[in-house]
Image (cartoon, rainbow, N blue to C red; front, side):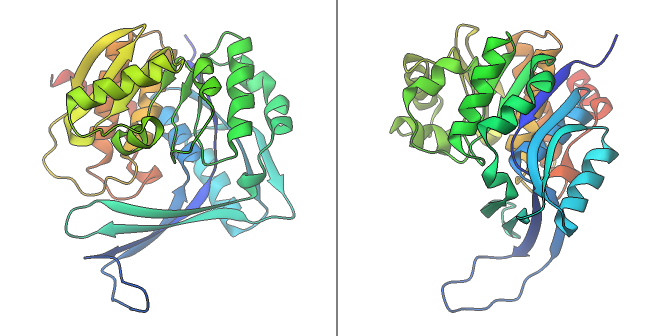
Length: 309
């Protein structure tokens, strides 16, 4: 049996990660305690996560014809990602992201410049129709223009493909977008921005999930970091605890790992609850390694963690 197909519409950026105890204040220079560059961008990270978790991953994006674009092509080739829907732009650079990682907590703060991917358009989505229509799951985010995400969700819905919107970064959007989503997957901060509700406890997360379903989402799945993930909607209402990990090294790619793993499990026909568990396992493994794309676990690693119970 072939690998289940997952199409991801999103951006690639080169991650430029700096480690330090804290961010500098304006006008201040501080010494770092580590630097690393590598492939990043939510869409690309999620595609790599999906490929390593066992999917036939298909990337839909724009990159420049430059050094960072070459980094993207090498990263995708290494994980066997289908790039037939990737457009190479001769006039704009590939995107980049500044990532601050705290040496004290492992938490992060990020500035993203999308570069060529900021020009991803509805026409690019239309050109990727074969890749989307032939997939079991379509996954997108908000790092590229919202109208482009909308076009992708509409096209996927028209072909009966399961749709996942990871609304990151959280932006004010018309509620009509939620009606195109089988699953909307914000973290607690994004859920608070989208709903205007405080999301710090499990009960508050449920209230926010109910609000997103009221706005039209079929299911709302709110990721709560070390607490786990809460789902509410047509697939039921339940909380899946996060996996206990021996040490958190870097949380930067955790959300992307979760979404990529969750998408793969749904594409393979697993129940929503089993898919959330699979996503939690994928995320739990990713936080134990540094970086974003490099931290994405393999299918064997995910299955080994799930087997531990």
